[in-house]
Length: 304
Image 1 (cartoon, rainbow, N blue to C red):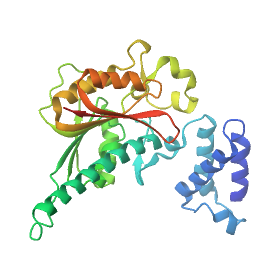
Image 2 (tube, rainbow, N blue to C red):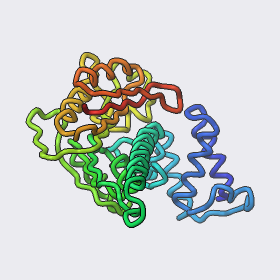
Image 3 (cartoon, rainbow, N blue to C red):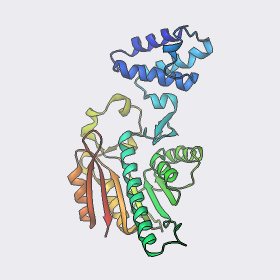
Image 4 (cartoon, helix red, strand yellow):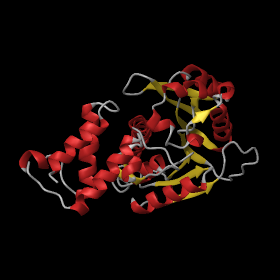
């Protein structure tokens, strides 16, 4: 069968479910993944004929896409901060908004490193010009696929990164992703909601993208998210939507080093309410940021 005819089949079978541009993106993602073909291949070779063996995974992928299964779960991979991650139904698919949270952390750390180097170079020029910044300790709470922890470990060579999750299945995925991306992370199988949680460590940075979608917001959630991504990592009850943020703030109050920073991804509708949680736990320099779509999405506070 001609490759261009399979593209037409994708467009026909998925029309009415997804926009044309998204269908094309699915098709090209599949041929890149299964056939190792670049996206421009049809432009330069419009008459490519596939064997039955080459066709089969494309047809299987199309059948799953018709059921609105996310492409990342169909392919088993997702990209985040220019890294590749294995994903399945036990972990959330990494999202661009979360990349913004990671970039905020990286920018702050790099600014701090520059400040330290400038101070030291001003004090001790010459023999100590290669002074290295102190190692950082970082904890990612609710790590899922490990995307936040792994991206930070990849970019911050002086950091010791820990990652916590309540799901053993998620931790297996994250451990595999850490190995594939060649970073060393210490994984902790714990629940941040456990009142008996006992971690005898101090951290310079705590970061979390916890569950924050209220049950009342389920109507806004697309079927491909609601039916396939793990509810454990998505939803919170309407009457206690900030349960994870209170637990994280309480934990961070005890386990952040002095002047340590807490970074959170948040529900866009609960920005001010989440700020009040940090204020109630005596965090300072609280900053609420919008994502690329203009939604209140990220929150930062410092331990006094």
